[in-house]
Image (cartoon, rainbow, N blue to C red; front, side, top):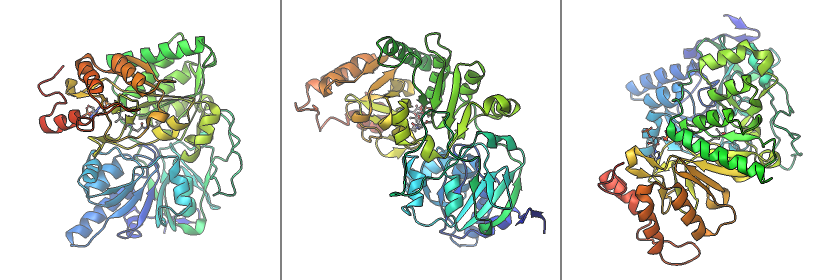
Length: 498
Ligand code: 0RQ
Protein backbone atom coordinates (compact mmCIF):
# COMPACT_ATOMS: atom_id res chain seq x y z
CA UNK A 1 0.00 0.00 0.00
CA UNK A 2 1.28 3.49 -0.86
CA UNK A 3 1.87 5.70 2.13
CA UNK A 4 1.82 9.46 2.72
CA UNK A 5 4.13 9.64 5.75
CA UNK A 6 2.53 7.26 8.25
CA UNK A 7 -0.91 7.51 6.59
CA UNK A 8 -2.30 5.10 3.98
CA UNK A 9 -3.05 6.62 0.59
CA UNK A 10 -6.56 5.51 -0.32
CA UNK A 11 -8.92 6.16 -3.22
CA UNK A 12 -11.94 8.42 -2.89
CA UNK A 13 -14.08 5.28 -3.27
CA UNK A 14 -12.32 3.61 -0.35
CA UNK A 15 -12.81 6.76 1.71
CA UNK A 16 -16.53 6.75 0.84
CA UNK A 17 -16.78 3.14 2.06
CA UNK A 18 -16.03 4.35 5.63
CA UNK A 19 -19.13 6.55 5.62
CA UNK A 20 -22.49 5.07 6.57
CA UNK A 21 -26.10 6.06 6.05
CA UNK A 22 -27.35 8.56 8.64
CA UNK A 23 -23.91 9.74 9.78
CA UNK A 24 -22.94 13.36 10.39
CA UNK A 25 -20.10 14.30 8.07
CA UNK A 26 -18.16 17.58 8.01
CA UNK A 27 -16.57 18.74 4.78
CA UNK A 28 -13.96 21.48 4.59
CA UNK A 29 -14.74 24.55 2.54
CA UNK A 30 -16.22 27.97 2.90
CA UNK A 31 -17.96 28.99 -0.28
CA UNK A 32 -16.18 27.18 -3.06
CA UNK A 33 -12.80 27.77 -1.40
CA UNK A 34 -10.82 24.92 0.11
CA UNK A 35 -13.63 22.40 -0.15
CA UNK A 36 -13.20 18.63 -0.26
CA UNK A 37 -13.49 17.81 -3.96
CA UNK A 38 -12.80 14.10 -4.52
CA UNK A 39 -14.60 12.21 -1.74
CA UNK A 40 -17.98 13.99 -2.23
CA UNK A 41 -18.13 12.68 -5.83
CA UNK A 42 -17.39 9.14 -4.62
CA UNK A 43 -20.11 9.54 -1.99
CA UNK A 44 -22.55 10.67 -4.67
CA UNK A 45 -21.76 7.47 -6.65
CA UNK A 46 -22.18 5.40 -3.51
CA UNK A 47 -25.56 7.03 -2.76
CA UNK A 48 -26.80 6.32 -6.28
CA UNK A 49 -25.61 2.74 -6.17
CA UNK A 50 -27.21 2.16 -2.74
CA UNK A 51 -30.48 3.75 -3.90
CA UNK A 52 -30.51 1.50 -7.01
CA UNK A 53 -30.28 -1.47 -4.65
CA UNK A 54 -33.22 -0.11 -2.67
CA UNK A 55 -31.06 0.78 0.34
CA UNK A 56 -31.10 4.17 2.08
CA UNK A 57 -28.01 6.36 2.01
CA UNK A 58 -28.10 9.99 3.09
CA UNK A 59 -25.83 12.02 5.35
CA UNK A 60 -26.14 14.94 7.72
CA UNK A 61 -23.76 17.46 6.13
CA UNK A 62 -21.91 20.33 7.78
CA UNK A 63 -19.53 22.77 6.11
CA UNK A 64 -18.27 26.23 7.07
CA UNK A 65 -20.78 28.02 4.88
CA UNK A 66 -21.91 27.26 1.34
CA UNK A 67 -19.85 24.77 -0.65
CA UNK A 68 -18.59 24.26 -4.16
CA UNK A 69 -20.56 22.23 -6.69
CA UNK A 70 -19.40 18.93 -5.17
CA UNK A 71 -21.72 19.17 -2.19
CA UNK A 72 -24.69 21.44 -2.76
CA UNK A 73 -25.15 20.26 -6.37
CA UNK A 74 -23.58 16.83 -6.95
CA UNK A 75 -24.25 15.25 -3.55
CA UNK A 76 -27.68 16.88 -3.40
CA UNK A 77 -28.66 15.62 -6.87
CA UNK A 78 -27.80 12.06 -5.86
CA UNK A 79 -30.11 12.31 -2.84
CA UNK A 80 -27.17 11.90 -0.45
CA UNK A 81 -28.09 14.76 1.92
CA UNK A 82 -30.79 14.41 4.56
CA UNK A 83 -29.83 17.34 6.78
CA UNK A 84 -27.70 20.40 6.07
CA UNK A 85 -26.26 23.30 8.05
CA UNK A 86 -25.31 26.16 8.26
CA UNK A 87 -25.61 27.86 4.81
CA UNK A 88 -25.99 26.87 1.15
CA UNK A 89 -26.24 28.45 -2.29
CA UNK A 90 -26.92 25.44 -4.55
CA UNK A 91 -29.93 25.42 -6.87
CA UNK A 92 -30.50 21.68 -6.42
CA UNK A 93 -30.19 21.75 -2.66
CA UNK A 94 -32.37 24.86 -2.39
CA UNK A 95 -35.14 23.05 -4.25
CA UNK A 96 -34.87 20.01 -1.98
CA UNK A 97 -34.95 22.19 1.14
CA UNK A 98 -38.03 24.07 -0.06
CA UNK A 99 -39.72 20.72 -0.86
CA UNK A 100 -38.93 19.54 2.67
CA UNK A 101 -36.82 16.70 1.22
CA UNK A 102 -33.78 18.02 3.14
CA UNK A 103 -33.88 19.43 6.66
CA UNK A 104 -31.97 22.72 6.73
CA UNK A 105 -30.64 24.58 9.76
CA UNK A 106 -29.86 28.19 8.80
CA UNK A 107 -27.29 29.46 11.35
CA UNK A 108 -25.17 32.48 12.23
CA UNK A 109 -21.79 31.35 10.92
CA UNK A 110 -19.79 32.40 13.99
CA UNK A 111 -21.97 30.05 16.05
CA UNK A 112 -21.12 26.90 14.11
CA UNK A 113 -17.72 25.89 15.57
CA UNK A 114 -18.85 26.53 19.13
CA UNK A 115 -22.20 24.77 18.58
CA UNK A 116 -20.16 21.74 17.45
CA UNK A 117 -17.82 22.03 20.44
CA UNK A 118 -20.71 22.36 22.91
CA UNK A 119 -22.32 19.21 21.43
CA UNK A 120 -25.38 21.16 20.23
CA UNK A 121 -25.26 19.50 16.80
CA UNK A 122 -24.63 15.94 17.99
CA UNK A 123 -21.53 13.91 17.36
CA UNK A 124 -19.45 14.22 14.18
CA UNK A 125 -18.78 10.81 12.68
CA UNK A 126 -16.25 11.85 10.05
CA UNK A 127 -14.54 14.86 8.56
CA UNK A 128 -13.20 15.21 5.03
CA UNK A 129 -10.70 18.07 4.90
CA UNK A 130 -8.65 19.51 2.05
CA UNK A 131 -5.04 20.33 2.96
CA UNK A 132 -1.74 21.01 1.25
CA UNK A 133 0.09 18.84 3.81
CA UNK A 134 -0.49 16.68 6.88
CA UNK A 135 2.57 15.93 8.99
CA UNK A 136 3.24 12.67 10.89
CA UNK A 137 2.52 14.46 14.18
CA UNK A 138 -0.87 15.67 12.95
CA UNK A 139 -0.35 19.24 11.77
CA UNK A 140 -2.81 19.95 8.98
CA UNK A 141 -1.97 22.83 6.64
CA UNK A 142 -5.26 24.02 5.16
CA UNK A 143 -5.65 25.66 1.74
CA UNK A 144 -7.93 28.53 0.65
CA UNK A 145 -10.33 28.51 3.59
CA UNK A 146 -10.25 27.80 7.31
CA UNK A 147 -13.96 27.88 8.25
CA UNK A 148 -14.86 25.08 10.68
CA UNK A 149 -12.02 22.73 9.64
CA UNK A 150 -9.92 23.08 12.84
CA UNK A 151 -12.96 22.21 14.98
CA UNK A 152 -13.98 19.30 12.73
CA UNK A 153 -10.47 17.86 12.85
CA UNK A 154 -10.56 18.05 16.65
CA UNK A 155 -14.03 16.53 17.07
CA UNK A 156 -14.63 13.99 14.28
CA UNK A 157 -14.26 10.30 15.10
CA UNK A 158 -12.62 9.59 11.75
CA UNK A 159 -10.72 11.93 9.43
CA UNK A 160 -9.97 11.75 5.72
CA UNK A 161 -7.46 14.26 4.39
CA UNK A 162 -7.65 15.27 0.73
CA UNK A 163 -4.15 16.42 -0.16
CA UNK A 164 -4.64 18.86 -2.98
CA UNK A 165 -1.50 19.01 -5.07
CA UNK A 166 -2.50 22.12 -7.03
CA UNK A 167 -3.09 24.28 -3.94
CA UNK A 168 0.08 26.17 -3.06
CA UNK A 169 1.79 25.12 0.21
CA UNK A 170 2.47 28.82 0.71
CA UNK A 171 -1.24 29.43 1.43
CA UNK A 172 -0.38 28.45 5.01
CA UNK A 173 1.45 31.75 5.41
CA UNK A 174 -1.94 33.46 5.69
CA UNK A 175 -3.46 31.02 8.22
CA UNK A 176 -3.86 32.04 11.87
CA UNK A 177 -5.58 29.23 13.75
CA UNK A 178 -6.82 28.91 17.29
CA UNK A 179 -9.84 27.04 18.72
CA UNK A 180 -11.58 28.93 21.51
CA UNK A 181 -12.10 26.75 24.60
CA UNK A 182 -15.65 26.37 25.91
CA UNK A 183 -16.92 28.66 28.71
CA UNK A 184 -16.10 29.15 31.55
CA UNK A 185 -12.50 28.89 30.33
CA UNK A 186 -12.44 31.82 27.92
CA UNK A 187 -10.06 34.76 28.14
CA UNK A 188 -10.18 38.03 26.22
CA UNK A 189 -9.20 37.46 22.59
CA UNK A 190 -6.08 39.57 21.86
CA UNK A 191 -7.14 40.82 18.43
CA UNK A 192 -6.86 44.61 18.58
CA UNK A 193 -6.32 45.23 14.87
CA UNK A 194 -7.58 43.39 11.74
CA UNK A 195 -4.01 42.16 11.19
CA UNK A 196 -3.35 40.87 14.74
CA UNK A 197 -2.10 37.28 14.69
CA UNK A 198 -2.88 35.11 17.72
CA UNK A 199 -2.53 31.50 16.59
CA UNK A 200 -0.50 29.05 14.53
CA UNK A 201 -0.53 28.39 10.76
CA UNK A 202 -1.91 24.84 11.04
CA UNK A 203 -4.89 22.90 12.42
CA UNK A 204 -4.27 19.79 14.48
CA UNK A 205 -5.54 16.22 14.22
CA UNK A 206 -4.84 13.14 16.31
CA UNK A 207 -2.90 11.01 13.73
CA UNK A 208 -4.67 7.87 15.02
CA UNK A 209 -7.98 9.23 13.68
CA UNK A 210 -6.71 9.67 10.12
CA UNK A 211 -8.28 6.83 8.13
CA UNK A 212 -6.41 7.78 4.97
CA UNK A 213 -5.13 10.38 2.60
CA UNK A 214 -6.80 10.92 -0.79
CA UNK A 215 -4.67 12.63 -3.42
CA UNK A 216 -6.45 15.20 -5.54
CA UNK A 217 -5.58 17.94 -8.01
CA UNK A 218 -8.86 19.78 -8.66
CA UNK A 219 -8.67 23.57 -8.30
CA UNK A 220 -11.36 25.57 -6.49
CA UNK A 221 -14.13 26.56 -8.88
CA UNK A 222 -15.35 30.01 -7.94
CA UNK A 223 -17.62 31.55 -10.56
CA UNK A 224 -16.99 35.08 -11.73
CA UNK A 225 -19.21 37.86 -10.44
CA UNK A 226 -20.98 39.98 -13.00
CA UNK A 227 -19.43 43.39 -13.63
CA UNK A 228 -20.99 46.07 -11.40
CA UNK A 229 -24.06 47.42 -13.23
CA UNK A 230 -25.47 50.93 -12.93
CA UNK A 231 -27.65 49.90 -9.98
CA UNK A 232 -24.68 48.68 -7.85
CA UNK A 233 -22.81 51.76 -9.02
CA UNK A 234 -25.57 54.08 -7.75
CA UNK A 235 -25.88 52.16 -4.47
CA UNK A 236 -22.12 52.49 -4.00
CA UNK A 237 -22.18 56.20 -4.77
CA UNK A 238 -24.90 56.89 -2.17
CA UNK A 239 -22.96 54.85 0.35
CA UNK A 240 -19.62 56.54 -0.34
CA UNK A 241 -21.23 60.00 -0.13
CA UNK A 242 -22.66 59.01 3.25
CA UNK A 243 -19.37 57.60 4.60
CA UNK A 244 -17.47 60.69 3.47
CA UNK A 245 -20.01 63.02 5.12
CA UNK A 246 -19.80 60.96 8.32
CA UNK A 247 -15.99 61.30 8.28
CA UNK A 248 -16.32 65.06 7.73
CA UNK A 249 -18.78 65.27 10.65
CA UNK A 250 -16.31 63.38 12.86
CA UNK A 251 -18.65 60.42 13.45
CA UNK A 252 -16.28 58.12 11.57
CA UNK A 253 -12.51 58.63 12.09
CA UNK A 254 -10.79 60.17 9.06
CA UNK A 255 -8.71 57.04 8.47
CA UNK A 256 -12.05 55.13 8.23
CA UNK A 257 -12.81 51.95 10.18
CA UNK A 258 -12.40 48.32 9.07
CA UNK A 259 -15.02 47.37 6.50
CA UNK A 260 -16.98 44.16 6.05
CA UNK A 261 -18.74 43.48 2.77
CA UNK A 262 -21.34 40.78 2.28
CA UNK A 263 -21.70 38.25 -0.48
CA UNK A 264 -23.38 38.55 -3.85
CA UNK A 265 -23.21 40.63 -6.97
CA UNK A 266 -24.35 43.85 -5.33
CA UNK A 267 -21.80 43.70 -2.49
CA UNK A 268 -18.94 42.75 -4.83
CA UNK A 269 -19.82 45.66 -7.13
CA UNK A 270 -20.08 48.10 -4.24
CA UNK A 271 -16.64 47.13 -2.94
CA UNK A 272 -15.13 47.75 -6.37
CA UNK A 273 -16.60 51.26 -6.55
CA UNK A 274 -15.90 52.12 -2.94
CA UNK A 275 -12.31 50.98 -3.19
CA UNK A 276 -11.47 53.29 -6.06
CA UNK A 277 -13.30 56.42 -4.85
CA UNK A 278 -10.94 59.39 -4.38
CA UNK A 279 -12.65 60.54 -1.14
CA UNK A 280 -12.24 57.17 0.58
CA UNK A 281 -8.79 56.77 2.19
CA UNK A 282 -6.90 53.45 2.02
CA UNK A 283 -8.69 51.12 4.44
CA UNK A 284 -8.57 47.67 6.04
CA UNK A 285 -11.19 44.94 6.16
CA UNK A 286 -12.37 42.62 8.91
CA UNK A 287 -14.67 40.41 6.89
CA UNK A 288 -15.73 36.87 6.13
CA UNK A 289 -14.92 36.21 2.49
CA UNK A 290 -12.20 37.83 0.46
CA UNK A 291 -13.50 38.37 -3.09
CA UNK A 292 -11.96 39.14 -6.48
CA UNK A 293 -12.49 42.89 -6.37
CA UNK A 294 -10.32 43.09 -3.24
CA UNK A 295 -7.19 41.52 -4.81
CA UNK A 296 -6.69 44.44 -7.14
CA UNK A 297 -7.50 46.97 -4.41
CA UNK A 298 -4.75 45.44 -2.30
CA UNK A 299 -2.23 45.58 -5.14
CA UNK A 300 -3.06 49.24 -5.71
CA UNK A 301 -2.50 50.05 -2.04
CA UNK A 302 -6.18 50.98 -1.53
CA UNK A 303 -6.79 47.98 0.73
CA UNK A 304 -4.08 47.89 3.38
CA UNK A 305 -4.89 44.57 5.00
CA UNK A 306 -7.74 42.08 5.39
CA UNK A 307 -8.83 39.41 7.82
CA UNK A 308 -11.23 36.76 6.47
CA UNK A 309 -11.92 33.04 6.69
CA UNK A 310 -11.97 32.24 2.99
CA UNK A 311 -10.37 33.27 -0.30
CA UNK A 312 -13.50 33.00 -2.38
CA UNK A 313 -11.77 34.06 -5.55
CA UNK A 314 -11.42 32.88 -9.13
CA UNK A 315 -8.45 30.80 -10.28
CA UNK A 316 -6.86 33.85 -11.93
CA UNK A 317 -7.12 35.96 -8.77
CA UNK A 318 -5.72 33.09 -6.68
CA UNK A 319 -2.82 32.86 -9.14
CA UNK A 320 -2.06 36.54 -8.54
CA UNK A 321 -1.95 35.96 -4.78
CA UNK A 322 0.20 32.83 -4.97
CA UNK A 323 2.63 34.43 -7.44
CA UNK A 324 3.02 37.43 -5.14
CA UNK A 325 2.88 35.67 -1.80
CA UNK A 326 5.62 37.79 -0.19
CA UNK A 327 3.32 40.77 -0.72
CA UNK A 328 -0.04 39.17 0.15
CA UNK A 329 1.02 37.06 3.17
CA UNK A 330 1.76 40.28 5.07
CA UNK A 331 -1.63 41.73 4.22
CA UNK A 332 -4.07 38.81 4.40
CA UNK A 333 -5.03 36.67 7.38
CA UNK A 334 -7.30 33.62 7.21
CA UNK A 335 -8.90 32.69 10.55
CA UNK A 336 -11.43 30.11 11.75
CA UNK A 337 -14.93 31.50 11.24
CA UNK A 338 -15.61 31.85 14.95
CA UNK A 339 -12.86 34.50 14.94
CA UNK A 340 -13.36 36.08 11.49
CA UNK A 341 -17.00 36.66 12.50
CA UNK A 342 -16.56 37.06 16.25
CA UNK A 343 -19.13 39.47 17.77
CA UNK A 344 -16.75 40.77 20.44
CA UNK A 345 -13.94 41.52 17.98
CA UNK A 346 -16.30 43.15 15.49
CA UNK A 347 -17.57 45.44 18.26
CA UNK A 348 -14.03 46.19 19.48
CA UNK A 349 -12.66 47.05 16.04
CA UNK A 350 -15.70 49.17 15.12
CA UNK A 351 -16.38 47.33 11.86
CA UNK A 352 -18.65 49.03 9.33
CA UNK A 353 -20.86 46.19 8.09
CA UNK A 354 -22.35 46.32 4.60
CA UNK A 355 -24.67 43.46 3.74
CA UNK A 356 -27.34 42.77 1.18
CA UNK A 357 -31.08 42.43 1.68
CA UNK A 358 -33.62 40.64 -0.45
CA UNK A 359 -36.16 43.03 1.00
CA UNK A 360 -36.53 45.54 3.82
CA UNK A 361 -39.69 46.76 5.45
CA UNK A 362 -40.67 50.36 5.99
CA UNK A 363 -39.52 50.17 9.61
CA UNK A 364 -36.03 48.87 8.79
CA UNK A 365 -36.36 45.13 9.39
CA UNK A 366 -34.40 43.13 6.82
CA UNK A 367 -35.08 39.81 5.11
CA UNK A 368 -31.98 38.40 3.40
CA UNK A 369 -32.93 34.77 3.20
CA UNK A 370 -36.58 33.75 2.65
CA UNK A 371 -38.71 34.70 -0.37
CA UNK A 372 -42.36 35.15 0.82
CA UNK A 373 -40.95 34.28 4.25
CA UNK A 374 -41.18 30.66 3.11
CA UNK A 375 -38.70 29.73 0.37
CA UNK A 376 -35.02 29.77 1.28
CA UNK A 377 -32.69 31.63 -1.05
CA UNK A 378 -29.32 31.04 0.68
CA UNK A 379 -29.41 31.77 4.41
CA UNK A 380 -28.48 34.42 6.96
CA UNK A 381 -24.76 33.62 6.58
CA UNK A 382 -22.50 36.00 8.47
CA UNK A 383 -24.77 39.02 8.04
CA UNK A 384 -26.11 38.79 11.60
CA UNK A 385 -22.67 38.23 13.14
CA UNK A 386 -21.47 41.47 11.60
CA UNK A 387 -24.54 43.71 11.64
CA UNK A 388 -25.61 43.18 15.22
CA UNK A 389 -22.13 44.00 16.51
CA UNK A 390 -20.90 46.58 14.05
CA UNK A 391 -20.08 50.27 14.49
CA UNK A 392 -22.58 50.95 11.74
CA UNK A 393 -24.84 48.41 10.04
CA UNK A 394 -25.73 49.13 6.42
CA UNK A 395 -28.09 47.03 4.30
CA UNK A 396 -28.30 47.53 0.58
CA UNK A 397 -30.53 46.25 -2.17
CA UNK A 398 -31.81 47.32 -5.58
CA UNK A 399 -35.24 48.95 -4.95
CA UNK A 400 -36.97 46.53 -7.33
CA UNK A 401 -36.38 43.03 -8.65
CA UNK A 402 -37.73 41.11 -11.65
CA UNK A 403 -38.30 44.20 -13.83
CA UNK A 404 -40.30 45.95 -11.14
CA UNK A 405 -42.70 43.09 -10.38
CA UNK A 406 -41.10 42.95 -6.93
CA UNK A 407 -40.49 45.89 -4.60
CA UNK A 408 -37.71 45.36 -2.12
CA UNK A 409 -39.35 47.88 0.20
CA UNK A 410 -42.48 46.30 1.68
CA UNK A 411 -44.87 47.07 4.56
CA UNK A 412 -43.78 44.08 6.64
CA UNK A 413 -41.10 41.46 5.98
CA UNK A 414 -42.58 37.96 6.24
CA UNK A 415 -39.21 36.75 7.57
CA UNK A 416 -36.62 38.81 9.43
CA UNK A 417 -32.91 38.03 9.57
CA UNK A 418 -31.72 41.37 10.91
CA UNK A 419 -34.23 43.29 12.99
CA UNK A 420 -34.81 47.05 13.15
CA UNK A 421 -32.57 47.22 16.24
CA UNK A 422 -29.58 45.96 14.23
CA UNK A 423 -30.12 48.05 11.10
CA UNK A 424 -28.99 51.67 10.99
CA UNK A 425 -28.72 52.59 7.34
CA UNK A 426 -30.54 51.22 4.31
CA UNK A 427 -29.64 52.09 0.75
CA UNK A 428 -31.00 51.38 -2.70
CA UNK A 429 -30.13 52.95 -6.06
CA UNK A 430 -32.87 55.51 -5.27
CA UNK A 431 -31.05 56.83 -2.21
CA UNK A 432 -30.03 56.24 1.38
CA UNK A 433 -32.04 56.36 4.61
CA UNK A 434 -30.11 57.08 7.79
CA UNK A 435 -32.34 55.60 10.49
CA UNK A 436 -30.25 56.47 13.54
CA UNK A 437 -32.27 58.11 16.28
CA UNK A 438 -35.58 57.91 14.40
CA UNK A 439 -38.82 56.44 15.76
CA UNK A 440 -40.83 54.00 13.63
CA UNK A 441 -43.05 56.45 11.75
CA UNK A 442 -40.18 58.78 10.97
CA UNK A 443 -38.15 55.77 9.77
CA UNK A 444 -40.99 54.63 7.51
CA UNK A 445 -41.34 58.03 5.84
CA UNK A 446 -37.60 58.26 5.24
CA UNK A 447 -37.30 54.75 3.80
CA UNK A 448 -40.27 55.24 1.47
CA UNK A 449 -39.13 58.69 0.30
CA UNK A 450 -35.42 57.89 -0.08
CA UNK A 451 -35.26 54.18 -0.94
CA UNK A 452 -38.52 52.82 -2.39
CA UNK A 453 -38.94 52.81 -6.14
CA UNK A 454 -41.30 55.63 -7.30
CA UNK A 455 -43.74 52.95 -8.62
CA UNK A 456 -44.35 51.73 -5.07
CA UNK A 457 -44.19 54.96 -3.04
CA UNK A 458 -47.93 55.85 -3.19
CA UNK A 459 -48.92 52.34 -2.17
CA UNK A 460 -46.52 52.39 0.79
CA UNK A 461 -47.59 55.85 1.97
CA UNK A 462 -51.28 54.80 1.71
CA UNK A 463 -50.43 51.71 3.73
CA UNK A 464 -49.21 53.84 6.65
CA UNK A 465 -52.12 56.29 6.40
CA UNK A 466 -54.65 53.45 6.63
CA UNK A 467 -52.82 51.53 9.34
CA UNK A 468 -53.99 51.28 12.93
CA UNK A 469 -52.04 53.76 15.05
CA UNK A 470 -49.63 52.38 17.63
CA UNK A 471 -45.92 52.63 18.26
CA UNK A 472 -45.44 50.77 14.98
CA UNK A 473 -48.51 51.40 12.77
CA UNK A 474 -49.64 48.35 10.77
CA UNK A 475 -52.71 46.94 9.07
CA UNK A 476 -52.68 43.25 9.84
CA UNK A 477 -55.13 42.54 7.02
CA UNK A 478 -52.92 44.19 4.43
CA UNK A 479 -49.35 43.87 5.63
CA UNK A 480 -48.62 40.97 3.28
CA UNK A 481 -50.85 42.08 0.41
CA UNK A 482 -47.84 42.71 -1.88
CA UNK A 483 -46.44 39.24 -1.19
CA UNK A 484 -49.85 37.61 -1.71
CA UNK A 485 -50.24 39.44 -5.02
CA UNK A 486 -46.80 38.26 -6.08
CA UNK A 487 -47.61 34.64 -5.30
CA UNK A 488 -51.01 34.79 -7.00
CA UNK A 489 -50.31 36.98 -10.03
CA UNK A 490 -46.51 37.11 -10.43
CA UNK A 491 -46.45 40.81 -9.59
CA UNK A 492 -46.70 42.71 -6.30
CA UNK A 493 -48.97 45.34 -7.85
CA UNK A 494 -50.89 43.38 -10.49
CA UNK A 495 -50.46 44.82 -13.97
CA UNK A 496 -47.36 46.69 -12.91
CA UNK A 497 -44.02 46.44 -14.62
CA UNK A 498 -41.14 48.85 -15.00
O1 0RQ B 1 -32.87 36.43 -8.78
O2 0RQ B 1 -31.04 34.95 -9.47
O3 0RQ B 1 -33.33 34.73 -10.49
O4 0RQ B 1 -31.88 36.74 -11.01
O5 0RQ B 1 -32.80 37.30 -5.87
O6 0RQ B 1 -30.54 39.01 -6.31
O7 0RQ B 1 -29.94 41.35 -6.83
O8 0RQ B 1 -28.54 39.45 -7.85
O9 0RQ B 1 -28.51 40.02 -5.36
O10 0RQ B 1 -26.52 38.40 -5.74
O11 0RQ B 1 -26.44 40.46 -4.29
O12 0RQ B 1 -27.78 38.44 -3.58
C1 0RQ B 1 -29.58 38.69 -0.35
C2 0RQ B 1 -29.56 36.76 -1.95
C3 0RQ B 1 -28.58 38.99 -2.59
C4 0RQ B 1 -27.38 37.55 -0.92
C5 0RQ B 1 -28.79 37.98 -1.44
C6 0RQ B 1 -33.91 37.89 -6.57
C7 0RQ B 1 -33.25 38.55 -7.78
C8 0RQ B 1 -32.20 37.49 -8.15
C9 0RQ B 1 -30.42 37.62 -6.27
P1 0RQ B 1 -32.23 35.65 -10.04
P2 0RQ B 1 -29.34 39.98 -6.71
P3 0RQ B 1 -27.20 39.33 -4.80
C10 0RQ B 1 -21.91 37.38 4.88
C11 0RQ B 1 -23.07 38.03 4.30
C12 0RQ B 1 -27.47 36.52 2.80
C13 0RQ B 1 -26.16 36.12 3.40
C14 0RQ B 1 -25.29 37.30 3.71
C15 0RQ B 1 -27.47 36.64 0.32
C16 0RQ B 1 -31.74 36.98 -6.78
O13 0RQ B 1 -26.63 38.68 -0.58
O14 0RQ B 1 -27.69 35.46 0.22
O15 0RQ B 1 -25.67 38.45 3.70
N1 0RQ B 1 -27.33 37.23 1.54
N2 0RQ B 1 -24.05 37.01 4.00
O16 0RQ B 1 -34.17 38.81 -8.80
C17 0RQ B 1 -37.75 37.64 -4.44
C18 0RQ B 1 -37.22 39.72 -3.49
C19 0RQ B 1 -36.01 39.71 -4.25
C20 0RQ B 1 -35.77 38.59 -5.08
C21 0RQ B 1 -34.08 39.99 -5.23
N3 0RQ B 1 -37.52 40.75 -2.68
N4 0RQ B 1 -38.06 38.67 -3.61
N5 0RQ B 1 -36.62 37.56 -5.16
N6 0RQ B 1 -34.57 38.82 -5.67
N7 0RQ B 1 -34.96 40.56 -4.38
C22 0RQ B 1 -20.94 38.32 5.49
C23 0RQ B 1 -19.60 38.44 4.80
O17 0RQ B 1 -18.68 38.95 5.33
C24 0RQ B 1 -19.42 37.92 3.43
